[in-house]
Amino acid sequence: MPVDEKLKKEFEFYKSQPEEWRKENQGNFVLIKDQKIQGIFESYTDALQEGVKLFSTEKFLIQQVGQEDIINYNTSSLIGVM
Picture 1 (cartoon, helix red, strand yellow):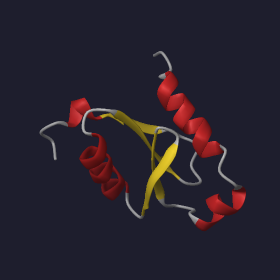
Picture 2: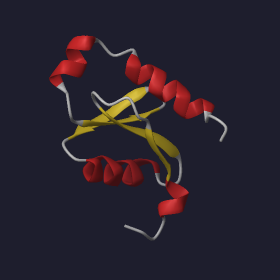
Picture 3: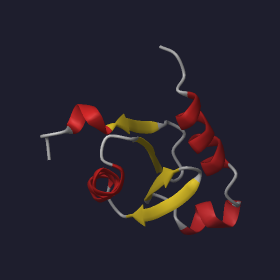
Picture 4: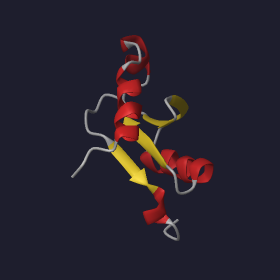
């Protein structure tokens, strides 16, 4: 599966955050769009709901702080789910 360059840039932005920031937010879910932190949430569901509310069908990144796996959604596949 090809790597989505936009989401790759968002993940690189996430990785560029200072170690102290990552320690403070360990376990939380960060919502990133356009290489900006749009919010930090205690649950994945809260981050996803905010991402859908703000960005509708555009792609955005949800990353659990301290985890290496990228979690991302093209929200067009979620329309009508929530």
